Image 1: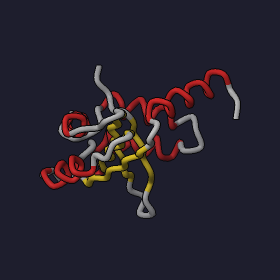
Image 2 (image 1 turned 90 degrees about the horizontal axis):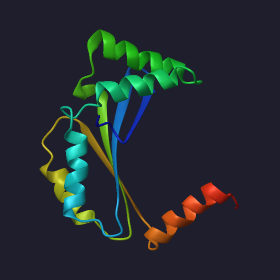
Image 3 (image 1 turned 90 degrees about the vertical axis):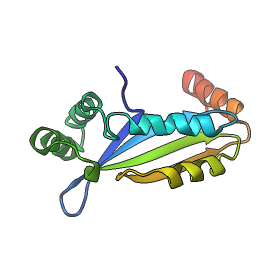
Image 4 (image 1 turned 60 degrees about the vertical axis):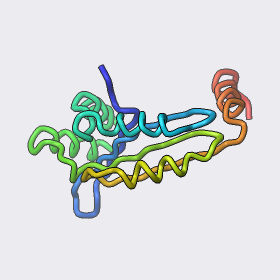
Length: 142
């Protein structure tokens, strides 16, 4: 079963729910193909979060201080259905390289109706950063 890399949601001041579908990619050298891969993930399921991922996400929220957000997501999903005007996309890229020309081309070529946001985190020691982060999680430390 294919899911979404990450989902987020919030209730606006108008009481309406906004859902963000996130596709993330990490490569030392991030190229056009990787950006295309991320776009393919965002485009999956008619650009909407998969029903399974969204239901699981909302159910997990029910046991947190954000239970009102979980209830709003489930209510929307069951009563109206999720539409593109409820959803935003985030392409999160983690790399050592500069993929800005590929990201710009991707955003310019996008013809859908879902709002788009990209974040690129560039770290020169990409692999070392990941290794160090995992070691700190596994072994603890500052």
